[in-house]
Image (cartoon, rainbow, N blue to C red; front, side):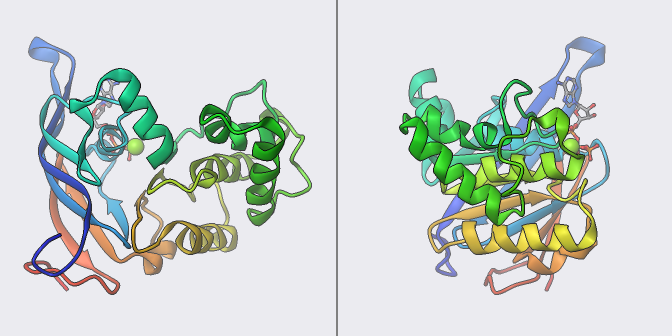
Length: 243
Ligand SMILES: Nc1ncnc2c1ncn2[C@@H]1O[C@H](COP(=O)(O)OP(=O)(O)OP(=O)(O)O)[C@@H](O)[C@H]1O
Ligand SMILES: [Mg+2]
């Protein structure tokens, strides 16, 4: 908890991540310092290539960072062995990728159910639950369609349902409205806010879509692999930030 009484869901301290070697090294994350509070929806904005997807990936444990510390709900993911890390992520993290990453051989409802199946839910129960989430996303009639039979916006909503279906404590979404029209984008982010933002949970959304900024509690601005400033846009109390 910080001095303002906020519980810290995600803590990043001097987080670094590079790609490549020697002359070709690319410091995608130069030094990221960021706290994401439980109960907040934080949006992350910044120019193409500044490190947004890389930051989401190291926070979600999809990539390992190579310097600094990340704690998720007090847990240092790098301190866990591979199995324990996979278990922790399976229960606690939902990820909607920029490129959707749906499995082409699975139907919409099977794709959305993947996190539950990985957690060992019985197939019938997992598909029912995933079907409910797709229904909320306006895809109730397309449960048995394959990704190739669906539009980009429909695929994006499946990816979104998959991120939320297991009610993880942390949801991270990379450009979740990029393939959606304005009205559907607002509906989906409204649902995200209603379903995933709770006092003990947090959501991080990478976006450049100003139509959805009003759903945020704070907006963090990133440049050249660093958070350069954050702006409070909702009800979160913090010190030392632009308001
Ligand atoms: N797997 C990789 N191998 C090499 N370089 C990478 C890799 N992934 C990202 N990078 C580089 O790291 C930097 C940050 O990339 P990242 O994808 O995090 O940017 P971004 O802010 O998400 O951009 P966009 O808004 O275009 O999605 C870029 O210079 C990119 O080329
Ligand atoms: Mg990106």
